[in-house]
Each structure stands twice: as structure tokens, then as C-alpha cells.
Length: 60
Image (cartoon, rainbow, N blue to C red; front, side, top):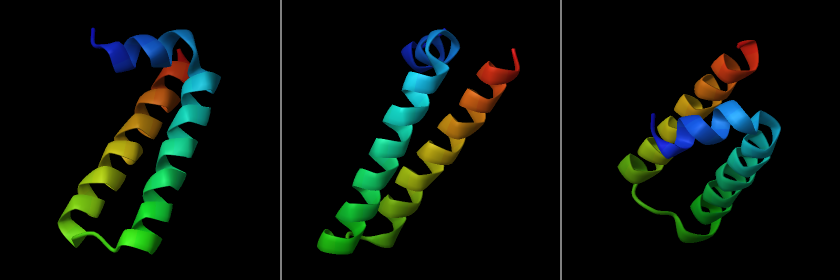
């Protein structure tokens, strides 16, 4: 069990808040820095995966 899944299983609402802030940070970086598209896609995929993990933890 990795660190992320431990956080999701024990503190789902805290981790959701952190996830939203990280996603917002990436959106702001995207607006101001205009990084390469591939890097941005990978960042957003991480967020989508984390939201799916959170949904699974909430259903447990």
C-alpha cells in the first residue's frame, strides 16, 4: 500500500481538498507559463486517477 492510498483511505475529504488545490495550481501554471502539452496532459491524468481512487475510498 503506497502513501497516496493510505491518505485516501484515512482522510478522504482532506485529500479531496488537497487534490482540488493541486489541480487549481496546475491550471494556473498552465495559464501563466504555457508549458508543453504532453506534460500538462500527464499532470491532469494524475488528478483524474486520484479522483477515482478517492471515489473508491468513499464507497468503502
